[in-house]
Length: 213
Length: 350
Image (cartoon, each protein chain N blue to C red):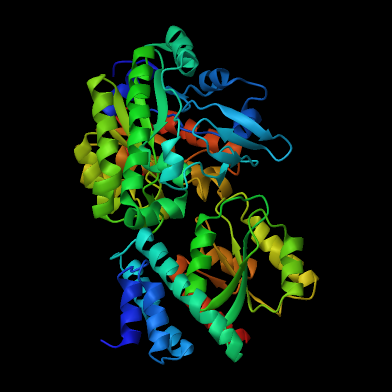
């Protein structure tokens, strides 16, 4: 097994306490940072995603593999920035107004980061105007809206309407998710994407990013 | 058919025998909904007005206000929480971030008498008439409040000893608390704690067996030794570990959320001989957005699929939360009264 494969395997095997040393060794062996990400981290994280979807692994494994990946990215991304390359896309994510739930959103944010997106989490109880400001003031391709409560889901639609009103709707792809959200609801309010779980959210984000870069 | 008291109706359902009609109560209902149905009423007045078969005594925990305007409190476990317009507050900060915090950690005292005064009052007023339910939580969800959600789950790998120690602290509290609610006169212990979300379990069977099930089992056994019934609640799609819950010896399972593919007809077939089923009128869709007719039909479906032979308590598929239409909730209860009489009229329910 070469060093890059070892990195990939370390993500799958949850070697959270070994990944930093392994990443540094791989860099020292002359493997470029981008290759470590593309051929080591991303396939490792994807493999975990498949296992998660198929019910072979669960949230502890998903969270720990994302943490393992983030540890490696903390070493690799500064190198890429110096070289002028970096994230595959930028995402702003938040829980809509009136809703303070952030577990699902944080899991999705971790998974997106683990898959090479730069994610800005603007928190919970975010009103439509703050989402609009965040989109206006930042160069982002995707806006993620989270809501757990049936009672706060309408704020997703209000946020999309606020983006339209501000003339920013075409600038970003809007993704929605949360326990009570469905694909049908996403379609109804004019969202561009819905993820039933964190893995689906990453897949959808990749797809939307390709459409919107 | 013999006429039963509200309490007897619940007990018979829990024993999977036919009562005179399908019983009903909710583990949690938003006060805003109660107020819309019966303005200004106390909890007890509301229960009597709706003729619930049981009253639910909240898990008693004092809170110290830290920031009144932002509605931020610290509870007796040390967790900082923020209230919103919903009844369940959101965790803001956890008290145990490492072993170091555990060294000086002081859990609440489960023997403080104030915790059981309401049950004692209810016993005087309702014993034998309406069932008295003590709502409590198993160590896993309380552990989440103490450690944080992601931190607790990752610590299954990174620091299992810390998780086990925290769960033991919570278990020690609840073993004494259970004995106290039983001594005060509770009939049923309702053990909440989410082990699943809508797509499946949060953790593997191995982790369930290592961290979650042993303390839960100890709590169930303590309650059973005290001679009370036990209802287990967890959100989500629980099919893969339901056998484990049944084997522990609970009397009922709640809430069979249809959003998580928990079909109550399938549940009746698989577990109807061992478990009383409590739920599953959809509170995410039907009770919140449906028409009164939709609610009526779905409630009839639940009774038809799971009511035969007893062993059913109709309730919402989680809670009667703030977005439930009051008229829909009232219609659900009315339908239970109208179509829940035993022997069930299957033709009318179809």
